[in-house]
Length: 77
Image 1 (spheres, rainbow, N blue to C red):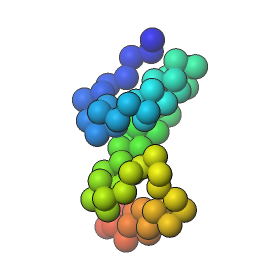
Image 2 (cartoon, one colour):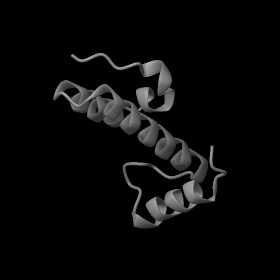
Image 3 (tube, rainbow, N blue to C red):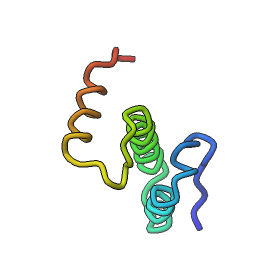
């Protein structure tokens, strides 16, 4: 298995389906910077769902739209 720095993605690491998906992406040879970008995005989405009280597996388009809106409202780094 391709190594993933799970410490960077603690919420993702605890979510079985998300963890399996990211590990699969790494195992099929996605570049490490791609894995990092995917990991950061999924980590952010899982945290958003937790705050909203939404099961990420059942999240619909309304939740995804709210997440995107939340990201757009954040200050730029």
